[in-house]
Amino acid sequence: MKYPLLRQGEAEGKMVGILMLSKWHVHAVDYARQVQAQPDARITCVWDEDAARGAAWASELGVPFEKDLDLALQRADVDAVVVDTPTTMHREVMVKAARAGKHIFTEKALATTVQDCEAIAAAIREAGVKFCISFPQLTSPLTQLCKQAVDQGLLGRVHYLRYRMAHNGALAGWLPEYWYKVEDAGGGAMMDLGCHPMYVASHLLGKPARITSMFNNTVAPGGVDDNAVSVVAFENQAIAVLETGFISPYNSDCFELLGTEGAIISVKGQIKMRSNLVKEGWYIPDQLPAPLPPALRQWLDGILHGSPIPFDLDKALALTVLLENAYQADREQRIIPID
Image (cartoon, rainbow, N blue to C red; front, side, top):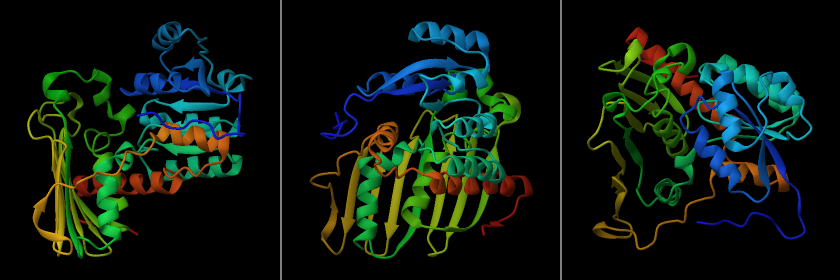
């Protein structure tokens, strides 16, 4: 789908110069392609904590490589950064980027600890730069349908969400070896794929009240969680069961949102719904909401036009609150209250 990129009379001819910060993340190449597809943004430089990897990627992209992060951030042709470094490096690179006056787009999670998130947020707010975190599931027709149904009361009192997002990356061996290094990634499957069910649950159910987890390691190197479940109770008494893993070749994408008057379920993209307030029985919605523009496009519109960026620091921080407490709950084998 193509989206309107420029508003008439605004930002005509403007081009956002973007510094790609690392090819570490498995989605870094995808973000580079997204940038290259925009008529009002271009990649102007690459930096990478692995100089050899970064230099090779810069050569592929046809842009300079700068091994010194501070010098890269000082470049006159850099207006903004796309962050795909190891998650545990996010605080270092984002604080530097904000202080250099560069707008920031980041892969999830913002950081592995709330303390690091707060340091990043303080630097961004002080600098006044535009920020966006990649929460792609919030742009999907399914999530929008659910949000509309919840807001309109079509499901009655929503009391249960089950969301499973998993793949077979560790089982089939297609994830890079460094993906399992806790010192870089900060965790395993829940820190990676588990982000998506977590931020969707908060989007639909509100403020969490307590959390517990059970994480296991089956085949993934490094002992990280490759089969994981967190259970979150929300202030409105709804419960979310959030499942993820790196060892699931079958039935790896399941969604259920249940209320006292209806439900929405999806298995492998097949969506059906029921609402006693609309009609009897299950039905397939006649028309799903259109997908929203990707987060990166919304970020560019925020930079160029001052448009609202919904995937903001508050949502980013809320995700890390869940993640940090989820891992603590598993380590301590208990229920953790969330302030």
